Image (cartoon, rainbow over all chains, first blue to last red; front, side, top):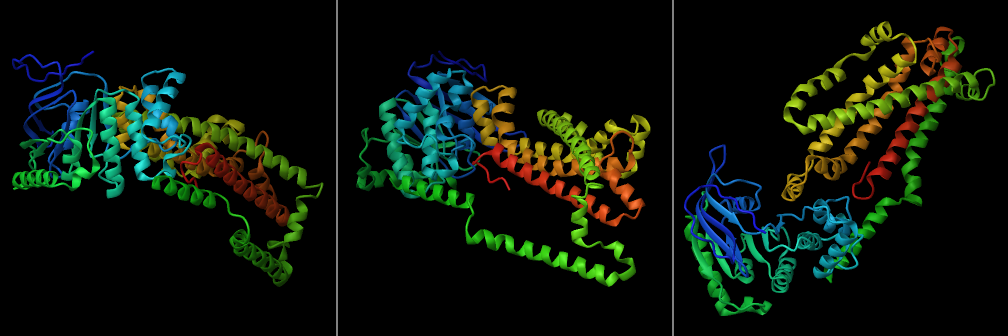
Length: 260
Length: 277
């Protein structure tokens, strides 16, 4: 199944079937005149994990909001070749009155999945993120990292073909963030979803992705793209190698240049 | 897993906050009890000092005696029952109207702009001034008393419910919108659930106000089955001070009981996810 949103009626070249998400010359101007994005070309193919880094306020989140349909681009075209999208917000956005199990079931519930089926689906997702035994806990009794895992599990119940991440680990401490990065890589290998990940941490970007895109300050433009050569699955120790540091350095440099 | 440990610590802290037995409880209640003792003592002292005008401040045991005396007690408690019924019916109506009113306003900006000024007007009307008008058009019986109770207790329900419905996180709304959830689904599964603490806080305020409304109504509308307000007016006119104090005491205690009951109900309804006062 595919859903396609085309804003401009420009002649479009035939799309590669492996392409899940395709932005062409996308620009976004808000009603108040703020130009958030300009001339963004970006594709995410199956098997790719693309990370966008950029200074705050550069419109990286707007990119995700367009991809998910929460916003409509004011110019350019955008195509999404799946309706199985996972969206992970900046905070865990759990419903505080629902225990973990019911929170993870929410999306399936909203899609009308019968009770037994969604309970099984949620159980599986909870296992996958390592929260077994915490099904009855309310979000307030969980740590920040566990809340984020619950949020991930909730998205996993939809079997997404593409995951959109809006700086999901930004508010977590370094140790928790690194551990969740590893978990995410494991899930990526296991579930084979594609990813579009927004972050302002260059290390996180390089560690997680197959491709890093650097955006400039407002209005956000793509200033550089880096292919990440390291094989998947990745060894956490890779973060301490010279090659890794070199790539992080290059990305950081591009980020600084673009911010000027 | 370090996460697990953090979790256990939080849970224990929550439990400890929930229960409060032992010496801490005594410390908590000692000051208000001491104050009560002082006030009772002051009443006896005042009564002794007033001499011939001692009837202005009856001795506390005489007041309490009126609550078991066969001549007065049935009157007082029957009147209290009538008042309680008016207050209860008024509260149920105010809650229903208030919640529906707030939901309507939360659905569209123009509805809010149209209806909110009237909620404010309702709150601003000096209820005492408009009460004779209500009697004039609806009679001096039960319905008029209920209308007064509703009018006086409606605003907290409207205001609190609206506040609760509109206080839902933007990201929570977007979470639902991303799944194509309907307005009805968002209202029932998200907004009303998120608003329960606010709604029950409003209910607790409105419950107290509906008792006030029922008593005020009584003062003006003495036909039908008179409540505690009518009784207070009667004792006051006859200078039956001990009876007067006894009725006021009963009415006040009733207000406190109502407040505590709705606090308890709120904690039950809201559950453990929110520290309901």
